[in-house]
Length: 154
Image 1 (tube, rainbow, N blue to C red):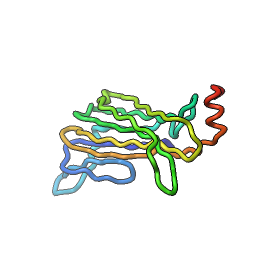
Image 2: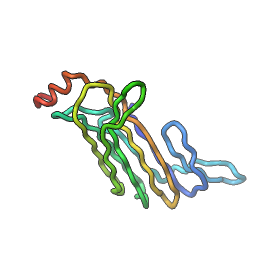
Image 3: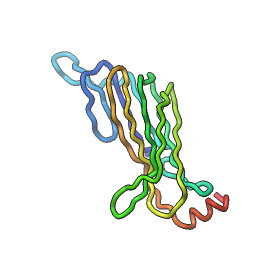
């Protein structure tokens, strides 16, 4: 199952965050919340985990929007696990508006360990601010992976 998230907005009053999705809600009738599914932006990691190519580890993601947001600032990071915490090896930030699609990439030098891609997005969609974070599937990179990548055999 691909990892990613969805940012949904419509005629809304508030945003509710839960299980990787930012959902805009509005009142329908006597104060009943209704999910506004008409407009949205999706964030996906593609591939779903970091890749090793050449002497580098790469992280890729894309955003696609039904309606372009007014503001969209995405920071894509490659993170590795060290002593029980995630450390950022490198980040790339883009202010490009997905209209309808925008691709993002970050890379860093290859080294063995547990890796993931982290995405953080802040912006404004239909006049409402959003703040969204998600992580890719983790990948354990071996010394052999790095050696093969730097020899160009991958």
